[in-house]
Length: 326
Image 1: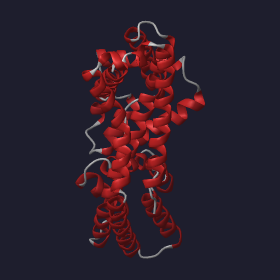
Image 2: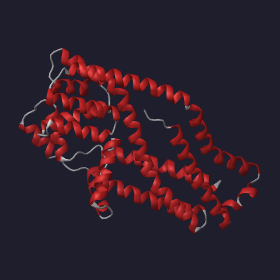
Image 3: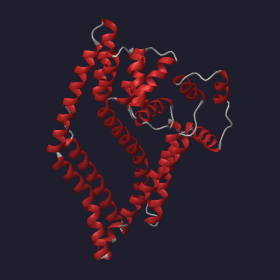
């Protein structure tokens, strides 16, 4: 029971800290980001650039800079590139050095928390250290998955909007701007980012490929490939986008049908995940002395760690079985 309360409390506190830090870090922008924001909107004069680039530093900006400096000592160049790519896919306004500091803080908090609750048990401390390492990574992966799913749900409507704009006489760049202005995040953010990169001198092909790399979606890869081929050899882009939109809508329909058929398997995975914690809570309420040796004795702690690891692999296997890709 103590382990269950430790994991629950630690996870809730860590998620709150992540959201608070993400909120404050999003309040500040680097000079390059201010220039990009300036170029993406209507011109406001040369004085406006000076006002945006020369802003007095605030407390959150100074804190973020210090965190980046500390995180630079714990992150390598290759790891930073991979991590920043994942953070961009998740839509989080964090840098790799900041994520490194957050991960180290999570590991330290998990270690100290589990040591305190287990009265100095080294095994429980290592378990807390491992959980502190995994929680930030799983949090980012979850954000990536949710953002990609939301993007895929919007892409068919975005293609219809682009196709209608092209029929109305708009250029392709104006159609992209229409998507960024009329639709909701995350697809509006990504298309606006493509437009900003093109305004800053990046080629259209490279900007589209970067968006496809950030989202890592099969549907978007299909759209980008079709657009790039059309730009090279010509063709009716409006008809191409309509056909792709119909294909994506049909894929979404089939995916929904598959989720309905695999609902029982996903429910079984959820029950397997929650049942041990619920059973431990019930036993602790009815007879605390019966379950406490599992947390207090070294053998019980080893059994508990093995059980957690086995349950994790079981959940991953169930997820692999019910996750049917088309």
